[in-house]
Every structure is written in structure tokens, then in C-alpha cells.
Image 1 (cartoon, helix red, strand yellow):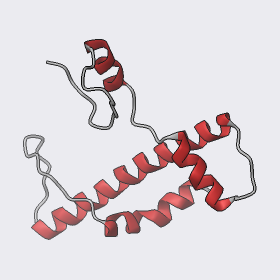
Image 2 (cartoon, helix red, strand yellow):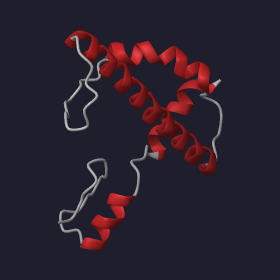
Image 3 (cartoon, rainbow, N blue to C red):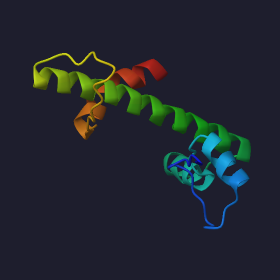
Image 4 (cartoon, rainbow, N blue to C red):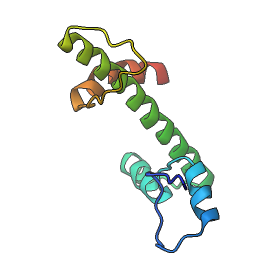
Length: 115
């Protein structure tokens, strides 16, 4: 059974097994064009090299992953308090919804850690 990466973008529906395996092992990324647009919003007259765009894309990707991880922890803690019980069992898998309020709660600390 082939494992596919839900974050990969495949333009062709006729992909081979090696292409699926390669995309499944590669982490999700932010496109260079999106990163360039974001940087130009803040610095409209600045020119950016491709290396700067790629480095900025990687930093944005890591920021998003860390924000999601911290917001998930916040959502799990809120869920446990709301349920009134601690869920420490490994066999008890449940889904917790990450909402904008969870991201807002961790945003200040995340920005402080990055500065």
C-alpha cells in the first residue's frame, strides 16, 4: 500500500510509484512566488535573490509548523479542562479542533521566541 502525502501537489494523475514515494518523503513547502509576494508587501522597492526567497520560504514553513504544534497543545489542554478529565491513555485517540483563538493565545510567545 503506497502512502501519499496530503500536502504534496501533483499536477498529473498518472504518477509512478517512485514519484509518489519521493513526494511522500518530502515535507510540505511554501511556494517561492508566494514568499516573494509576502516579502514585497513589506519591502516594495527591495530586490530579492532566489536564495533569499528559498531561505524565507523555509523559515515561514518552520514558523507555521511550530505555530500549529503549539496551538494543538493549547487546544488539547482546553479540551481536557472542558471535559473535566485528564486523557492520559495512549489508546484513547480523539480529535481536537484548533481554532483561531488557540493560535491567538500562542502568538505572542511564539513571536518572543523568534526574536
